[in-house]
Length: 219
Image (cartoon, rainbow, N blue to C red; front, top):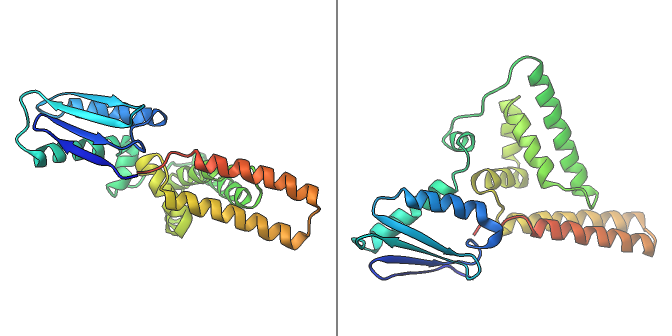
C-alpha cells in the first residue's frame, strides 16, 4: 500500500496506515510536536484508526511545495531519534568510556554479540535486542569493533535502521526470517531429528517469526 497525499490550499492530507497506526504512537506524538513548531501551522489531526494525518495552516499556505517541505522537515526531525543518535548520524561518534567501565562495556558487547549468533541458530532466542545491545556497548568501548559490526551486511543494516527510525525495513525483516528458517532447516536436516522434535522446533520457529513480524516497520 502506497501513501496518498492531497492538498487543498489550507490543509495537507497524508494517508498511510503503515505510519499512522496505534503501534506507532511515540512517533506520532513526536511528529505532532515538530509540526506544532512549524511557522503558520494551526494544528495537526491524526486518525490512527484510519491511518491518516491532516496538517492545517492558520492563514492558508503559499503552495503545495511549502506544505511538502514543512511536512518533510517535521518527519525528518521526528525520526532523527534522541540527541546521541542524531550526533552519531551527523558523523560524531559516541563517547568512549574510560577505566574499568570500558572493559565491562567491551565484555558486555562481546556477550551480546555471542547471544546474537546463538539467537540466529537457536529458535526462540530473540536476535535483534542482543544485536542492538552489542552495538550500544561496542560503540562506547571500541570504535574499531563497532565499525566492524556496522560493516557487516545484515547486522550493520539492522543497527542503522533501528538507530534512525526505531524500526526495520521489510527487506531486513525478511532477511532475518529467512536466516532463521534456513539455519533451523539445515540443522534439522543434518541431525535427522524425530518428528516430535521437528514439531516442537517448528512451533518455536513460528513464534520467532511472529516476533520478527511484530517489530515496527519502516514505511
